[in-house]
Length: 473
Ligand SMILES: *Cc1c(COP(=O)(O)O)cnc(C)c1O
Figure 1 (spheres, rainbow, N blue to C red):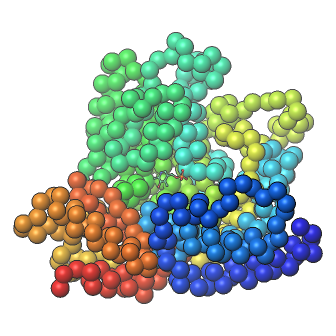
Figure 2: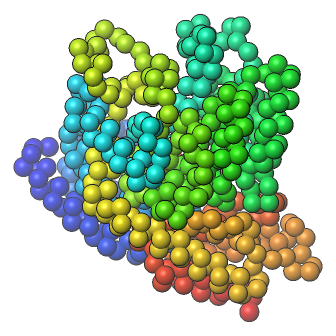
Figure 3: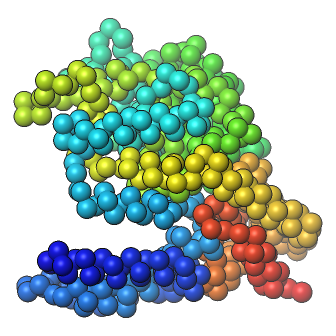
């Protein structure tokens, strides 16, 4: 493609992108297609001769677009949002254009220094402890893996990084703790770190689906008595099922007393710390050794962009630093070489979009959007409660409402679950909204997240009217 052609197509594409964003509600949130429908339309062999861009773009519109789930649609209320925003898209264009590798300072000095600065901005905006150091990771799953590996390499103060050097032989059996509501990425990290799923102890939760600290203390004491080494506790601020909030301060005291690494998974809810009125949910954060949250979920920054913070930068670097001769530079002692702060060597320039987003909206702009989301959730909860036919299945801590139709006298658990699953399927069938479910206390629970950047009261009202129209009159 010549630069002249590129210029023409890029202009066309920007117009298409703006139209897409403007008219997104004309698309069904989720496509109504069957497995294989897209694959069947794609030729089995890659083209031998180059094709022209107009043909490629036509195929994008005709084959790909009808098979996409539209995450930026205001009716997208499933899972957790993966928000984007116009400034984030613009930054992503520049990142793709420069296509720089941001592994060490020398490979892109501005990328390294901007990353350092925006991570400081973010920490201050969220009131995170001042001594923490931040780095951008691809996902929360990777950040949690980094936390567990760092805990593993630093638990033995007399012999640091011993498993990195010698492998597992002669090592104690480690234990990691989390609540029964914790995200699956914790178990994945425990497996990858060589600790084993059986050594991930799931601590029971209370009526609000938060970890019971007393049960944690008991489990740790029992494990110690049986010869295990308690390594790490993962507490969650905002669980995936119901945005439950583990009591970080009480858990922090237990970790401190027992010299156990405390990792906080706030992948989704961490964004809410931009609001001073929600900081109570992070009480005790200063006990944490590591902390992760995803601007790529709720903070208007398109995937991928995970903010990972650690208290002890040296412990992180010890765990991941590896120095091949060809990457050594005389500046290594003066700069941040982010390849030493995590798993990958090559890194995208992700700080740029965070910078664009933070500057375009300002703290106040993001806060206003978050407050709107919280208010919409409260509004929806009130409508559900006032109707009388629904139960709120978990506290509405943030912008997620977990609800379920109440059982009628003749209902069994199975039949009421079926009714709720039918209701959700009927909502999704319209293509106007996309909701997903969880199970809470054995009940099929419909989750509604009000977190899409452009969601407004009219969308919530539309959902409520739709639900009412689907119920027997
Ligand atoms: C989404 C989520 C994760 C996983 O995030 P990725 O960035 O996709 O790895 C982990 N924990 C919680 C609580 C989450 O909400």
